[in-house]
Image (cartoon, rainbow, N blue to C red; front, side):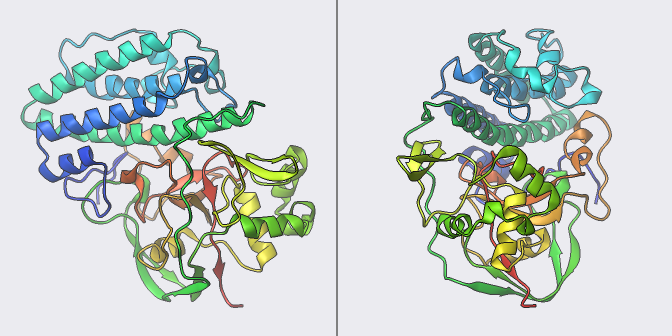
Length: 421
């Protein structure tokens, strides 16, 4: 199976994409891809719409990026990798943007330092909007004019860009929520974006069949290169929780001194707890003695029945140890997600105890697009599933998310496994 920065397939995916992408995959026509492009680009603007100009420039930490930067960077991606190589006579909107809005593509040239993105007060939001319109018009013209092998390559890169932008749509929400969490006024992003309730799953654990299983992406649809190649793994007997860990369980962990018991924690985790002063999940705070959590819909009382969210790998690992259980490997999780668990997608990402590394036979592609995933396969842990901020196209059993162990500004939770030992 040939490697590439991002694998692209033209068949129907085994998950339900957003309408525009579904139509594009099904018919593979110019019109369908133009509509998919409009859908994705429009969704980015819809997510940015509740935010003021001041909101869109803030950068709350080096790991987060301003909304304005997300909107400009995803536009630069299409300009850099699609328009410049393939649209004859294309006029670059602003030559400085390639420096300001490149992220980590070393092969594409120098870039502004990531921790300083919030200092780029100019260009203004209005100029970024004009940049997006300029690039959008050129992309649609290219798709409508390209022929033969050029059209095939244009659609391949277009699909990469659409999936790339959808990833930034999720980051747009996680990054602004982190910024709002540092505001003493606890701003509301959108009062209608209430976190979803947990699905009513059967209690307890379900057995994951022992033996050889195939994991990784195989079939029609779209996937990123880190989901390939599909391969077989052997699983020992294990039982996986049907449901996600809840706030009620986490409150018990807190009450039992979970954040004050060093024997429950990995050494790096305990050092982080001490350094950061963690006493509860991220975004939790007491209001008149009652635990509240900051959500996209504003500050809300902690719902005991809801899945716990905004916990780091260190916290997930400590909680599992407190429960006398384990976190699943990503292989166990993927096999279980094929019908054994009900709330795998659309609520919270779930930590696994698997380090983020390549699958057997993986090779990153050459060139700038080859820098997409492979260069980050070190010192991070894998999360599986998807959250309520994840575009539907990115909810599939083989999808691999990855973050550093202390990270908890993502919509991250956990489920447990029991080896019965």
